[in-house]
Length: 154
Image (cartoon, rainbow, N blue to C red):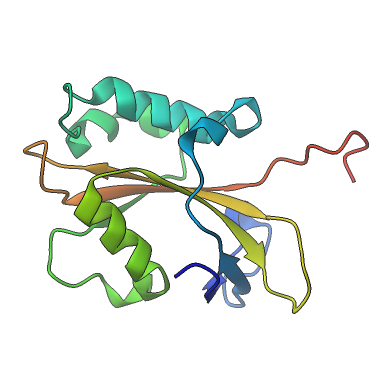
């Protein structure tokens, strides 16, 4: 799915959900790039890591708590236990299938597709959860605007 154009509604009400922004999905990024500018993503990843039992994946119940929802309010849960990914998530089907198959988190950047090179606009983090620690049934998806690291904020 890398480089494929998908439609994405702008997060946090900054766009029009009825007119998704066409985006290009980048290759998975190393998780060490979850740093201070991405506090919500880094926090969610640390919470997920802490909830793991050794090499086992955490169950959804370990993350889907009132405290977590308060701190990371716009997290979305995708049920991938069924054989088919829901049609609404079809633009992300390949990435969801990869996370489901490997049980590994995935961090990616999404760029607006305006026919010219543009900086990343969003970061997407997908965290797998499994009730038995092995078979992924739910994936936590977080989408955040990419932090503006320029000194003048422009």
